[in-house]
Structures are given as C-alpha cells and as structure tokens.
Image (tube, rainbow, N blue to C red; front, top):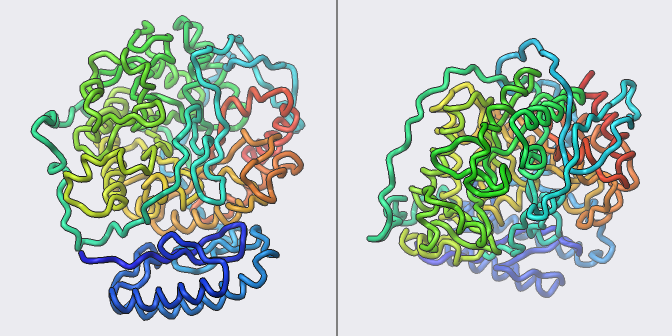
Length: 602
C-alpha cells in the first residue's frame, strides 16, 4: 500500500479546540503553523489526503486531497482563534460534530414520523402471583410520587454471595481522553482494561490491502473448524412490541433470584420480578442467558454457570431460561436472551470449565486470551465465531425467546499482543482494520444464526453511548451495522449521560445516534441509566452533580428520545437500580421513576 500520512483528527479536550497530528496535540499558534505545513506537505507528497471521515468514509483519494487542504486552512483559522481564548472555553458549549463535519441537529426538533420495531402485538395478559427479586432489603410498603402507587414487592431476601463481584454502575464513556471506565458496560461487574487506543480507525472499505481470508489465519496445530450445528427451526412467532420499554436483568441480579433455589422458589422469585416490571409499564426484559461463556439454560456447548448453582457445570435440576420465558409471556413481556459473546471466566475459574469446546483453547494463548485476570475469546478465528454463533442458534432454536441481545463486550483491550499471532498470520498491515473486520464477522454471524433459527426473533446490539469509544476502543463499527443490512434489527446505545455532561451531553449524543439509526432505517431504542440517580457523575465535568441536584432527568430524556424519527423505545439499566436502590437514593429514584412511568403509561 505504500506509506500513509499521519492522521488528522479533531479533539474536544478541556482546553481550546485543537488538532492532533500523528498523536501530537498542538495548543499554540506556533504548533498550529508547523502542523499546517506538515499537513500540506504530507497530503501533497502521499496524494492520499488527510484521514478525516466524511459521511462514514475516509478521504484517501488524491482528488480529495484538495478538499482536505482547504479544510486544514479552516481548522487552522479556528484553532488559532481558539488558542487565544482557550482558557475561557466552556467544554459544555463545544458542539459535537458529526462524521461529515456538520453540526448534529437538535434532537428536540419535530420528527414525529416514528419507526417502530416490527413484531406482533402482545397477547392478553394473565395475572400471576406476585413476588420479586434481589439481594438487598427494601421496604415493600413505600410508594412513589406517581398518581398510582408504584409498589415494589419483595418475595425474599438473601445475603450477597461473597464470590459475586459488586456491580459497578455503567457510565458508557466518561473521561475526556475517551478511555474506558470500569462502568462502561451494560451489566457491569468486571472492568475492561483501562487503556488508550494506539491505532487510528482504519477505512474498512479500503480494498487495496492484500487481505488474507479468515481461513488463512491458521497453523498446523489449529483445530479443524466444525460445521455449523443445525438445531432446526423454531416455529414460535416472537412477541415484540412496537415501542420497547425494556430493562436489563444482569447475571448478578438473576443469580440472587436463582442460586441455591428450588424450581418452585425460582419460579416465584422471577414471577415477582416480572410483576414489578409489568406494574412499572415495562414490556421487555434483556436477561442474561450467557455472561461468561457459560449457560443459564441446558446447553451442549457451554457449561452451567456458576451463578446458577454456585459451581461451574452443576445442573440445577430445572431450566431457568424456560421458566423465565413461561412467566414473562404469561404477562405479555418479551424475553430477549442477553449474551456476552467474548467474555469467559476468570483465570481461577476456567480450571473448572470442563470439556466444553472453549476448554480446548485454554492453553493455546490464541483463541482464549487472558486480559486483566479474565479470559476472552478471540474473534479472529473462524472456529471461535462459529462457537459463538452456534450458541446463539442453540438458544433461539430451542427456546421461545423473542430476541437475542449482546452488549458492548467486544475487544477487551487495544494492546496488540491480544491477537498478535492471528494478525501476523493474516498477512494484513492494519491491526485496527483487521479487528473491525473480525467484529463485523462476529456480529453478522450472530445475526444470521438468529434468523436461521427463527426469522421472527430480533437481534439487537447495546453498544457504548460514545460513538468514539466504539471505534477507538471496542473496534465496533456501529455506523456500518446501522447503515447496512445483515448486522442487527435495532440498536440500543447506552446513552448514560446527563444533559449537562461536558464530554457527551445527552441531547447531542442522542442526535448523533438518531442520525446513524435513520441512515439505515433501524429503530433506535435508547439505553438510559437509573443507576446514576442520586450519585455524583465523576467524569461528567461541569455536569458531575446533575444526578444529585436535578429532577425528572429520565422523564425528560425519554420525552426527547420520543421526538426522534427512528424512536423504537427505551431500556433502563438496571432492574436492581429501579426496584432495590440503595436506601440513600431510594426516594430520589422513586420520584424519578414515577415521572418516567407516567409517560410510558400515557
């Protein structure tokens, strides 16, 4: 391919607007002048232009060099002006700019033509006995400020399992450097390694690179990739609502209802939890079916989760997923089986994994890779993607789920050592492009598996709310997945930000996601965070006290989302945060939820 010029990026830092040239950030007029000269010379020499994204594509053609040079001059003028006033710049007033350099439209503008998620209407609801869920003690007599009492029913309490990690509240993105915080995921109990990206985003459409096919990533000791498992088709007609009002129930919350319980006790517990959801106007649950390359159902491919019985591989004597489905459908609630495709157990737990397929890769260091004390599957290999896709098909074929759902657990690190063997064997030269392609293949394979098993079931992806984080840290090409067919049915970005967040103000972030969803005609289900209510938002800059001092945040966020033309609903993180919040924030959570519920029950 020849040499590539260093890449030009626009940054939003705590200082004035700036230009990053090959990783060197300039904040004074002398640096700007030097940068401009370097940009002109490199573009003229290499004939490839600068690496600004325009409409989702990188400008790497000679003709576009002229456009890039003109843009460089504009940036130079603006940056020089910004340098003079940088100390007074309010980051909350810096517009987030879309891929083409156009200011994102105001999400409050009138876009009343809404695109709903396709699906059949809900059946008549049968009322079953109530009961609820989690580990914390709560007062079942407390009511919220809603017009109708918002009652929380608690069937039992149980001491927290000391072997279960504390839940970390998700914050999708936070720091000005766009690094991953420990809260950057939807289920959160384990941290993604906190690293800064070392590679720029590559243009995955560039076909000039000599690319090896996935089958070429191999060596003589590689296991033979098995043919796809055919579990047959499921004739069940999935129940999905025109407007999703969802909630995430993570493995930690599910474990509290399930671990050590009899079949009848678990049935009562999950029934009570679903009653709470129904009474709050929620019609969809995203509930863990696989969190650590394990299973909360009877599987041929993955062992029973330790969060089911306390021991990996121990059969509880009943099928929790089947019970969840029965109880949910009886209440008119959709069930989307939530899986983390790549995450496996900790290094200490994997020794008990048994003889399931992933165990064959435990000692190889290529397909199952240790990062920060946990193992992760490496999507660079066909057999890894096949196992994950077969696991998805196993669920959708054998169970009457209404959809399959994955969150933002893609690459756990930007460190080149994670997949260095596969990358070197691929013959490719751009690691970022290689990883983007792997995630594309992974997501596409899961989508195909779901549709092969049951065409009426939906596949959704809950990615990070920060579009930049998805690209710079996760290698998740969310723009492509939204714009093209064959990747997902709808998108659920975790927009866990307040209106006054300095880095990712909610309204502007929502507007950018609306643009991505609308480009491909995909419904946008907005992920909102109940878990932040009553707490300081550490990385929110000027808005760090917003969740402490402001009111009706969730209700206002929902109303703004409803104005989006691609609006397909909302999903709340998480069940525990709604129904069993800490006592210190309970009154505030109840007040927020009362206003939110009044809107969805309109």
